[in-house]
Amino acid sequence: MVPAELKAAIAVGIGLFISFIGLVDAGFVRRIPDSAHTTVPVILGIGGSIASWPTVVFVAGLVLTGILVARGIRAAILIGVLASTVLAIVVEAIAKVGPSNGINPKGWNLGYPALPRHVVGLPDLSLVGDVSFGAFARLPVLTASLLVFTLVLANFFDAMGTLTGLGAQAGLLGRNGQLPRVGPALLVEGFGAVAGGAASSSSNTIYVESAAGIAEGARTGLANLVTGLLFLGAIFFTPLYEVVPIEAAAPALVVVGALMMRQVRDIDFTDFSVALPAFLTIVVMPFTYSIANGIGAGFISYVLLRTATGQVRQVHPLMWVVAVAFVGYFAVGPIQSVLGGLV
Image 1 (tube, rainbow, N blue to C red):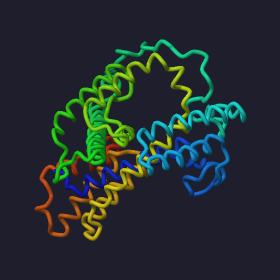
Image 2 (tube, one colour):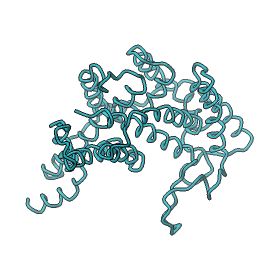
Image 3 (tube, helix red, strand yellow):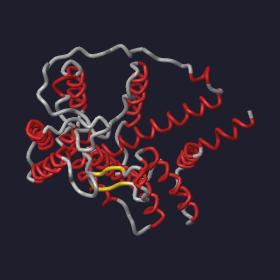
Image 4 (tube, rainbow, N blue to C red):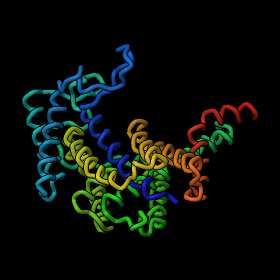
């Protein structure tokens, strides 16, 4: 039901989104505190300059990874992450930057680049199975149902958008922009999300960071199995991989975002009934920090513009259904207030 132009826009939007995540995680882009009394929401580094060693490590890693990818070096992204980690360890040993902990703006945001005391550690599984349905007892059934609706809608379209973007990055989409056997893929994703809830962990959905693996050549389920086994083994090596700071991994996200931008060539920006929905899909994702929000903005505007320009026959009936659902998704707060007053 989704037109090819919007599928391409989803891939581009995800590329910008993960690039933005990388820039923020590395401290290259920072939120300006409300106490600053300015309408500017973000700024470069600290005070408009790169004034912290972790951000310098990020910039060095980005340049190195970019050069390796441009030269066609295999495992370029992995080499970039490892080299950046080594640089971070050296910098921390000399400069004694310390962790951020929310109070040191020049510190390492996530992960601490120092040689660990232990390599192996036992995972904490105390939260596995700690599931509660108490929301339906504490909240009105209608309110709880609306909450579940927004979560399901966001999870599904996050997954659908990510799957489409990753499929485009891998070159797996057909001539009509359709990913082969998308149904079973989304079914597995749904089971993964439920399993994640049962384990009291983050939703086991499709991750946009998988684009890094695709950039290195992953195209089949074998790559997924290998990655899953490595994750399973990694839970016993937590002290080791905590050495890698987020500033060393962030360059990979920016580089992959740049690779995903190539999909923009499949969008016909000369037709404004396509250009505006595609543009909204692309920019709303990073600006609102949500893949689902970008898809919703694109779908609603596509249906409205196509209809208003006499091209309603080009709109799949399911697009209308999804557009109406997204209207409810965006207005869930007022809807809850109105329905709560009626109840």
